[in-house]
Amino acid sequence: MSEETKKKHHKEEKPIDKMTIKELKELALEIPHEHTEVAVRDMNKEQLIAFIKQARGIKDEVPVHHERKKKIKAKVILTRQDIKAKIRKLKGEKTAALEKDERKGAAILRRRISRLKKQSRKIA
Image 1: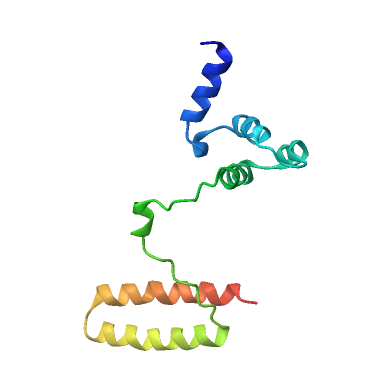
Image 2: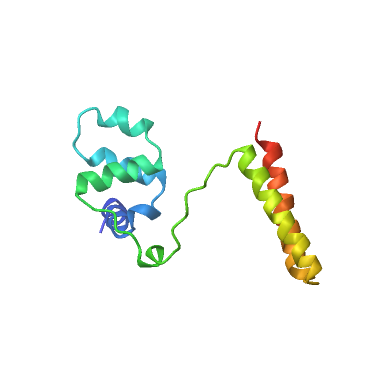
């Protein structure tokens, strides 16, 4: 086998996601497409991978371990008044916890109040 055929054979075995940008650009230039040379030169790695997968008809498969992860909840943006109301409620709970001699619960509430105060200062 010649050097050139070894390189091509090696590139085909390597998964597209693991290739370098240089290898991806060479692979993308082999795909017939109008304005290929100009388009490939300006693409970043993610765009090159998407272009090659689209040209080859490869669908993105989501790995199994990603499906098990918790879904991220959307952050709820609170107004300053909402935060202040929460602080007042937590302060009441904190004093009740201190009266019951629950220091651990009171410490947790104190930290929550502190975080909310910082959050309210950030809102302008």
